Structures are given as C-alpha cells and as structure tokens.
Amino acid sequence: MSGHSKWANIQHRKGRQDALRGKVFTKVAKEIIIAAKGGGDPAGNSRLRAAIAAAKAVNLPKDKIEAAIRKGTGEDAGGDLTEGFYEGYGSGGIAIMVEVATDNKNRTVAEVRHLFTKHGGSLGTDGSVSWMFDRKGVITIDRAAYDEEKMMELALEAGADDVIDDEDVWTIQTNMEDFAAVRDALESAGVTMQSAELAMIPQNLVPVEPAVAEKVMRLMEALDDNDDVQNVYSNADFPEDMAN
Image (tube, rainbow, N blue to C red; front, side, top):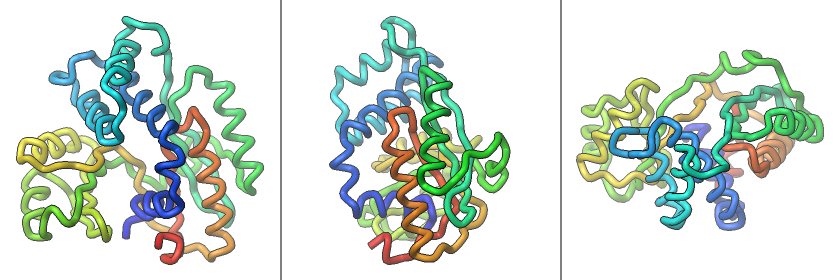
C-alpha cells in the first residue's frame, strides 16, 4: 500500500471523514477559490474542473461551489488566499510537508510551528524535507469497478506512470506535467474517479515503530485539523495494523 493511501485509510478507519465533513467542505471550497483565479470557466481551466469534481465527490452543495468560483474570480469578496508549503520533522525524524491555503501567512506559520512543537516535532526551513518528495498526480478509482488488466490498459495508455493496488482502490500516479491529460483521458473514457489531485509523494518510506507512529499520527491529525491546512504528507511507513 502506498504511504499516501495508507494515511487516507487511517483517517477513514478513525471515522474522521464524517466527523470532519465541515472541514472537508472548507478544503474543497478553498481549492475551487484558488483554481478559479486562473479563470472561472471549468471548460478552459483544468485545475478548476478537477476542483469542482472533488467538491461534488464530497457532496458540496452547488450554491457553495458557485460562490467559491465567484470568490476566486474576484466577483465576490473572500478570495484573497495564498497557497504554499511548510516543512518539518515529526517524532523519529519523520519528514512532514504541510500544504496550506491562507489569508494570513503570519497566523498560519505561527499555528503550524506551535503544533509541530506541541507534538514533539520541529518546523524546518524551506527545502529541509521537500527534496525527499516528488510532486505527482494521484488519481484513485474504486477497485471493484475495474479489473487489473482493464485499469492498467486505460491508465498506461493515458500516460500514467504507475497503477498501484491499494486494497479498496486503484491508485494511479502520474508526472505532474501529465496529470491533467491523464485525468481528462480517464474522464473521456467514462471512468468514475474517487479523487484526482496533485500530491507530495515520498521517494522512500521510513518504517516507524508503533510508539513513534502514534506520535507522528497525532501531529499529522492536529495539523490536518487546522483551518488553513489543505493536506499533510509524510514519509512514514505506518504499521499495517494502524490502517485496518
């Protein structure tokens, strides 16, 4: 199982997706706002098209999608968001990257630094851990909907780098430059995607003992709970029983 998917599965196991539905809505709305800065017509803006698809996948109401687009294009107030990354270390020297979308960078960096310190980690400088990650496209598809041969054929012909069997889903990885083309090709082929996003994928996973894994998980969850945080990534290889 890929590290990216294991983190998602652990969140699901703990019931966080239902408990944090409001947080999920906030995340997808912010992504729409940022994407819409490149144009409010999804037909000509592939990032916006993906953001809207992600919002619909979590049942964000249509009026909220439209409101987020207006904020992003500047028609309505509230679209002054800046995106970026913070880098640091958790317990055991585990590398962690935090993707944010904020209207106040000073507030966000202070809160992120506090969370790292509170949970036994430390906020690093730009470039301190990002060299351990690659920016890739990640698409997930219900495993039950397609057999392996069909999924491999569709994904690889579309230009994907890899198709990973992640238990309940097929995880398709692409180069960042190929992401939009692969996603659009799958969409044109009628493939229903559970998610499609750019993510920071660790080049290598670092196995962690259960005690360290719990500390790293608490830090990642605390960061993920912050309203300015969009995504949290790490190079931790969590014990298998944490994902069950």
